[in-house]
Length: 262
Image (cartoon, rainbow, N blue to C red; front, top):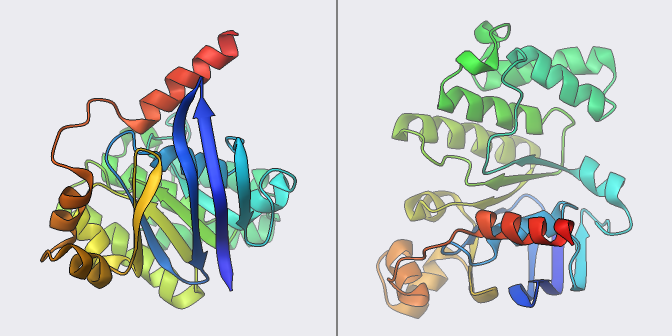
């Protein structure tokens, strides 16, 4: 069973094609890495999958639901950890999870049990009553992952989940994610610029550049097809070694602001 199906998906901003007729699927319980240079179309694709953007063309299915016409059902199907921090620093960690649980209609008894279990899982239970503004970057990231799981989603979207974190914290976060995947058959869809991260944890990888998927397969298949010894070398061979000056999220925000002004 596929948890995500994408067919001929495209998105344009003011004539610029950010996502160009891409198709792929992600199976139940799969860990799927969606990789690409800055500005390649990764964040735009995630926003369409998670109901935040409407595509110009193509079809999407998330847990069997259409994000365009079944938004509430789609949103209940997934949890998401955004690239940019989205938790409220003026609330305690517990209050952040409580608010999110209420938002998703989780009843009080279930909510209380899940908050404790999740905070214990990410090693934050002893700091549950601390204001988030006093948390370190790694603690905030772990809290965001716990928050994304409060409604027991079938799919977890992670947009650069370990960006800027030290190796110990990155390993800790991935340990929790692998546990969720193994024990609950939770489908994981993630982006990262740490190629070793993708190489170690992903069942399959799609590399997107200039809005197009240029290769999709297991890490071994991608390395074999490029005659390279690592995913990083394969990535550089396929996408080039020049520095990309503009990142995808800032481009998206800029173009959306232009549209709002109009």
